[in-house]
Image (cartoon, rainbow, N blue to C red; front, side):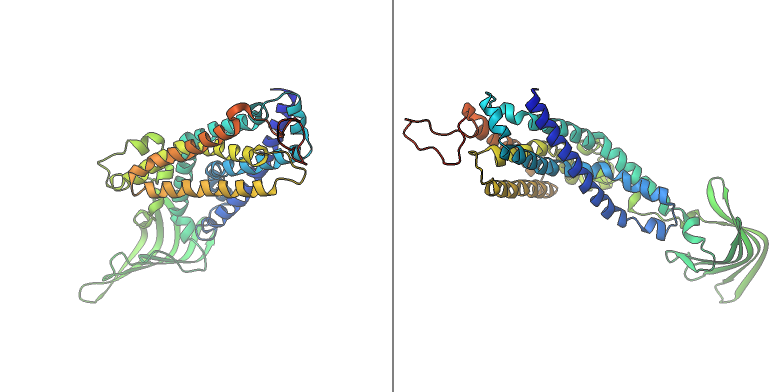
Length: 380
């Protein structure tokens, strides 16, 4: 690349990094607020909380990169164009392609990075995040052991401990409602959380178990030690089942027909697979729209507000339509072809309009050509 192209490349790159960084921080903050239950309800450490939030970063960054490219491209091109640097470059003999190539090269690099995130980074991060969330929510000890408070795990188990001294609980009450007709209440002088063959278990000492039998008679049993297995009460939720965003590309296109959930969501998985391959093209689409917004007309000292506004509306429209097509393709697989036609059609159309015939920016009518020069035009 020439010095002018290198200068423009790094100008846009710097703006992209700033915009993506700022928007990603806001998106991760919003995502993090939805995960505060891990600390408030499951008593997880701040390290676990931030680890889960950061695992969502690849997907957020990939979603924001096309939009950041458009904003950065418009801002950078508009600034150097108003400073007449583009006009000087053209006067030196640079073609429209040579002027636009730095932004297009950056768009291609972003598209490749976006594709890598879609195919490998995002599924790996999403799986790790879902597994971490599941483990955190299944940490029954952290959720239940709150000295001085009654806590419950759903409707089946209620737990109370008067105090905790070191690793020992004092004054323990357990209400087991697994069988609603014959609930069991257990009182223990002390208890400790242990693992028995990898299963979380409460070792109760000096315990009394009370239960009503079929004759509504109170049955009382006393134990010096009693092992209360907690594994049956561990939370199991939808976080344990992988979603479309957690699957790798081959899992989206080649589903397991013997799996009920995958067969049921086959169209959704197929739409997600096509989306993984087509969304990186939006980086090139947004870059071309940014180029067309600033360089797609004659030079004007009054600015390019109107063209930029039209281009911004067009960019947002393309993004909305792409999302709408992906959503519709989840119900009708025949619409998946539109996920390809939309970005490729926009890329082809804008490329033809901008680059066809080697038109130059700021082109004006020559004396004697039969036309009057635009008053704001700068001769090439």
